Structure formats: C-alpha cells, structure tokens
Image 1 (spheres, rainbow, N blue to C red):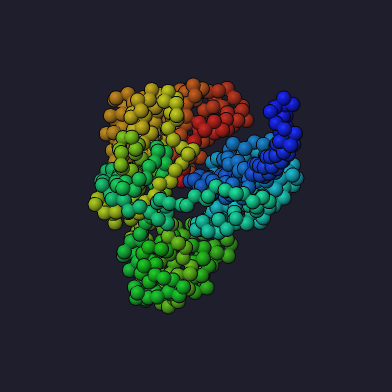
Image 2 (image 1 turned 135 degrees about the horizontal axis):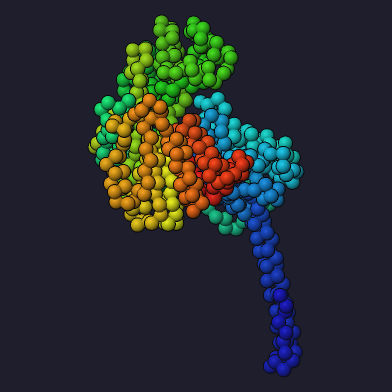
Length: 575
C-alpha cells in the first residue's frame, strides 16, 4: 500500500502539510502491520490437514467431521474425504494425514476403503517419507480381527516411509470419549492465537446414548404360517422428534433383554434383583436388562469361564485359538449355556459382570420413503428364534421388537445416515436392485421414493427367498408396482421350490446380457443383504457378466467393476 500523495497546490500551509504527511505515514504503517498479521494468520489457518475415513455405517465419517471441526479451532484448514476418493498421487502430495477407519465383518475393509487399500498395498504404491500420519481405528473386540483394517493401513503407511504423529488408537464399541481425547492430542495448535475460532458444535438430538422413544404404530408378520422364518413389518411414528431421514439410511434400535432370560440369569447367579455391583450405579437386574450383552458370548466370558468348567472341547478350541473352531463350538449356544457348563459352580457375581460387554444397538435398513410415509419410519425385521438345551433362544433385538414392543408401545431409536447408499439424484438413471429376504427393505423404500418423485428411470428388482407361497414378503405391494409400470422388471429366485436351488445370482447370470446393457446405459447397481455368502456370490456373478457380455479379460472386468464403485454406481448395504 502506497502513502497517499499530497498535491503541491492543495490548500495547506507548510506546517499543515508536514503534520498531514506524518499522520498518513503513521496510518499506512498501522495498516501494513494489520495486513501482515492478517496474512500470517490466514497462512496458518489454511495450513492443510487431510482427514480421510473408511466407513460402512457412518461412524468413521462422523468422527472425521468432528476431527475437522477441532482442526479448524486449532488453526488448520482440514480437507475431509472418503478413502475411495483418494488416489495414490494425491496421497503422495499430503503432508499431514489422519485416517479414521472401521473394520467391517470378519476383519475386512469397509466398502469405501477397499480400492484405496488395494492401491496402497500394491508394489506400485509411492514412497511417503514426507507424510506424517495417525490412524484412528474402530472395531469390536467381539470379533477375532479387532480393528484389523486400521492396523493394516497403519502398518502399510509405516512400510512406505511415513512418520507417525502418534501411536494408532484401537477403539472398541464405546469409542466416543477415547477417540475425542486422541484427536485432541494428535492435532496440536498450529502456532497462532486465533481471535475468534469457530466454536465446536454441541452435540444435540437423538443418538445411541440418547435414543428417542418412538411409538410403534404397526407390528405385523409378513411371512406365511408355514414359513421357516418370521419376518415382520414394524412402523414407528416419529412424533415430535424432528428426526428426518432419506432412502438408504438405517435406523438404530436400542434393545432391552428378554425378561425370562434376565430371570434365568438371576437364578443361575443365585442373586437378588436388587444386588449392588461395585463401581456400578445400577442394580443387577437393571444391568442385565438394559446395559449388558447377556446373549452373545464375549471373548472375556470364554476366557473367564474356561478355568472353572471341565469341558474338553471348550479347552481345545480356546487353546488352538481358531476362529472357525470357536464359532462352531458356540453354534446355538448363548452366554447362559456357558455358565451352565458347571451347573453347581457358585460364581462371583461382580466377576461375571466384568466379563460382559455393553448391550449394543442394532442397525436396520429403513424400508420406507419419507415422502411416501411422512412422520413415519418402517423396518423389515427377521425375528431370530431357536431351541437349544431344552431352552428357547432368541435374537436380542429382533425378538425385542417382535415380542416386547407391540403396537402402541415405544422403543428407543435414532437415525443412522448412509450417504453412500440411496436413490440416484438423476431420476432418469436406471436402477438394478438385488435384495433377497429382508434385503428387500431399502428397495421397497427406493421404489416408493421414485414413485413419489415421478422418476422415469428403469427399475429392476432381483428378489428371492425359500418358498414363494410363504416367503414372498410385500407380494401385494410389489405386484402393484409391477402392474403400474413403476417396477419395470422383476426376477424371482425361490430356492426351495424345485430340486435344484436357485438364488438371485443365478437369475442375474440368466439375464446377464440385459444387465450388462443397462450398466452401459449408466445404471446403478445396488445390493442389500447377507454379506458373507449372498453379497459375495452376487459380486462374483457381476464380474462374470461383465467379462462375458463385455468381451473382457478377467483383469479388465475387475477394473470395469472397480470403476462402477468409484463412480458410486455399485453400492452395497450388507451385514
């Protein structure tokens, strides 16, 4: 900035001219200092910090956004992205990186991190000596490969020469406080005092720790009387919650343990309901009912009970440590079955309680469109029941919903957004949906949404189950959608209605030419349901279809499918 020039013919005396020149020079000096300080502050505030996330249900993305908010208050310019949006070239240009990633299933990468991991673990991955990084891993100690996705990425970044900002943090299911503390420690001040930092937003609303008590307005069985399954349609009123959702989101449900199971635990522990537990604010019956996982055996329970019981098979599978052997041993058993291995043994109540994990919410794909059902949210739930050791066993949340919250009662719920899974923004884009069994849930919502929008895109559904007569849930609705022209194609696979079992992946292969043609026209390919078998078989069928009808090699077909994933045109909601 230049000092303003005072013309010689200006009507000032020499003394006035000298005073004014000094005033303007001083003003210029102050402005220059302010501009310089502002420039310095801006430089520090815009110091980049890359925060990337790998997520299946949204928890890691939420933490990444919280980290970004914190980083802004400390003088950084955070850049948040899903791992599927990060190329190796971009990674090699980064200076400071925080990775927040959850482990999915049995130690797998979440869907939006798989392609990143394949590139990072390849021999062509770049050296990263100039990168400083930290990994925040989310997982569940109930699974053998606890936080495996985070551990793999942490190790690989180190192998490529990157330097840790801090040691990796592995978080269990109750991660909020430890994760927040780790983020505060790993994101230091940028070295400047910020006069008016953006305030950290206060968390409000409904969550797994503060669920909304939603009234059940419909709870009915969809499957037939002779079905091997009990599939229910459950609808909640959102009331005054102000909760909103979009198609593709999930609903978290906070369950309560079955009363008869809690009573059986009290009897087995030979303890009164009001027994006080050290370091606990709740009584024993309150803990067993509302706070503790008393059905699914934890690793701590297995380790704790092993020395007290004389069970050769348990000792063998625990000593070998083979996950499949342990799972096979636990098949049909719950935690009470393990306590009953030594029926005469008197347990220390506090010790047994210390072996149990917190009771967790369950997430269900929403099966309604908010446009079609304003003020409501619908679920499609398979109630899990079986008998073992002359005692009924039940799925924790599915039978809580089926048995304990009939129409008129309330249950604790909260919304779980899924930004990766939803109806295409382009109403003309074709949709191919594969959802056998309760996997049809989000696609009922998708079709309702498209009907409300008046979308013109082709809708093609692959659905199946065991028997058409008993297991064709929502048959009337799907039939109406077909007859109205909303559902353009419907391919059914009822596996046990003929000698040879037929599944949805078989129907895909039978219609491979049309399916590939629709992908070439820009179709979106959605999958919902069982991750371990169905989703893998469907993925294999998709690769075969692309290879066969696209005239491609196996490698080219894989790259084609990977491109669909990068373009968010191949998206899964699997569990």
